[in-house]
Length: 361
Image 1 (cartoon, rainbow, N blue to C red):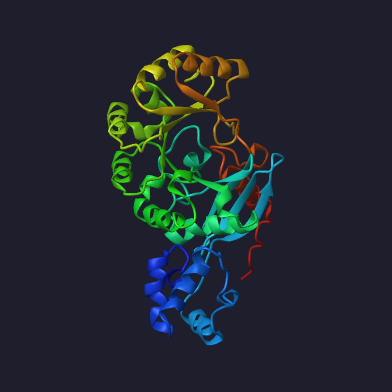
Image 2 (cartoon, rainbow, N blue to C red):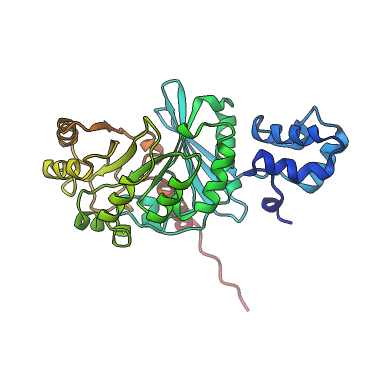
């Protein structure tokens, strides 16, 4: 069997205990294996030093601890760290660890591309990819955690990397259950472009992550222009779904709003947005567009004065607003930039390769 099929990564404690129990002589040994995998982030069965050598050898012959392989690490001037991973089938993904005050926020990917096609996102412009498995999702978290010192209590997780998480709900839910064993659901956020079936499914979970919605426009017409997914899931239906979403006490829905010069950044847009969100426990993350002249041609970031005016207009309407000054832009790690720099470098490398010499017959 392939390493991914026999891997214990992306599998929770209960399942690990069930899987390895036939190999152990005492029940507590199975729990020890699970503890090493989930809580001690073991990278090999040899690491499990409190297990008998015979058991370690047996585990190694039947199972693996397969993770995505880090093939490049780019460190930004602001200390953000962008990881380029190679998966078992040769696909690549990127994920980011952002340094915050006293902790890190890990931005994980859920797919190898994105079919949603938001016009402001390089990953979306580059096109669709396959779903990541639970092991490939959890593996990003594990490798980053080791790189950052191994303290799960000092990280938050956001599914804001490559892909639309709610197009991969089955594997996302499985990965969440594993992540919950070391990271509280209150420190995990799933961001979506507005897929109603997935939002409803999140709302039915007994333990729910926080919900963020990439909104980016206050009207259906403008949202269709920026986010084609709005044709399938219209804005009025999205807002009705969000108003019905069950929120625990003290929680709010985060609305992400990418500001694009001359398109959605005017004071009238802010007024429309405030009316749209009226009555919903919410906070708004304003994200000035991260420009990419290669993939996002014609789109520009608003100037600081326009960004400030938009934010103040929303605050005047008693809305909670933050401006997310994106981190890691110098290494292509900022919001909406993932895979762009890697794609340009790969294309340039292909162009620089010498043409093959024709064979003589």
